[in-house]
Length: 185
Image 1 (tube, rainbow, N blue to C red):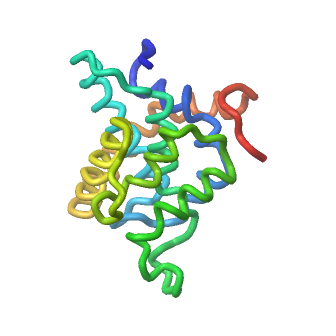
Image 2 (cartoon, rainbow, N blue to C red):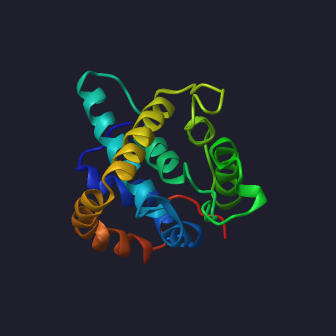
């Protein structure tokens, strides 16, 4: 599924309801890698996944952009700070994908591709391999972003916020409307 427009337009187009949700907004409080929040990480992964999809589509390889955006935004929707000492966080790397899927299914209507993307994004740490090309794209984009965030957090944040300001007005405008995809309240 390819639509005209640049990558920045696709985030609010396909994920506006997710970006404006209370759960996604709470991710701004939880750190992911280095000085990067879960929210920032999720948007960076989505952008990289969309860039990869754009390249694949130039090679005539179809990618479901709607599913890609929604699954990428929700892949770390576990909604807790895994750095806080807690017995339930001990095996975060092995368990957070399932928790993210449970939370995403509670708050949003998901398709099979989005479910697979969220559940398998930690492959091979989690043994179930991705079933869809969108899941593979997410798996790779997540690992690349996590590596970049961990190894050079200050450089990453500067670049991220520069890009963030460019689409914040579009996201805010979309969030104020009642359009978009179903959001469970």
